[in-house]
Image (cartoon, rainbow, N blue to C red; front, side, top):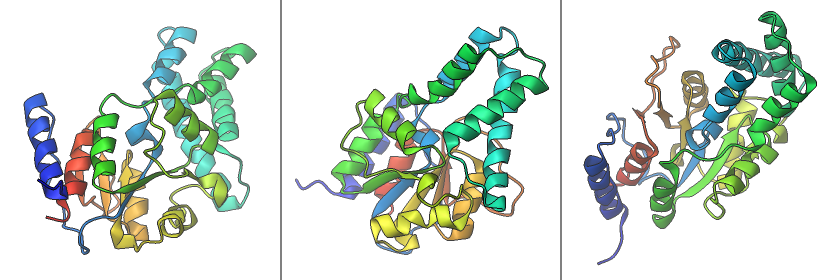
Length: 257
């Protein structure tokens, strides 16, 4: 029997039911005969939790505070640098945000701790549910890449650390256009890379603000909301959402049925 997207979707849905995985919420059907490509933000694929674990090791009882302040300042620096035309790559932004966050919390950040925390982004690997979903998408002929604020070095490292070579095309780091998401220049990279229309590319976001940016650009959007956060108050909803990569694959493979 020939393998089709319909049969792959049915098989994946059955596997999800057996494993207890959540099914994706209903979403608007694609306006084309299925998606041809998927552009992933970094963190639907890459598990960032080891960074938080390391922060807690350096600052017992204060790690969560540091991570929250650090993450907020990362985004603020990315957006401020894009708006002002003073781009610096995510490695430098991450370092500067960490230094500020530590100072703001009166934490003594040694040079060694700073280096290990920043370089932890080169040691990350994929979430456990990633490989089966990527394999299902690849088997169905779906093209895939990262479209991320992370540097290409960080993205390539995660692929290597997770033995995911062969699934993704060259990563689309915002370093290419020197503008962070949600700038339209960042989202536009996928149009050129895939040579597809907006409607043929599904963007998979890990954050609500990224859902909004991608939707405003014109992409169908899936929110991989692993921690069940509320939607941002931006007047935008994703075409579908779920809690696991199997939900993403089920939505993509079912788009042509």
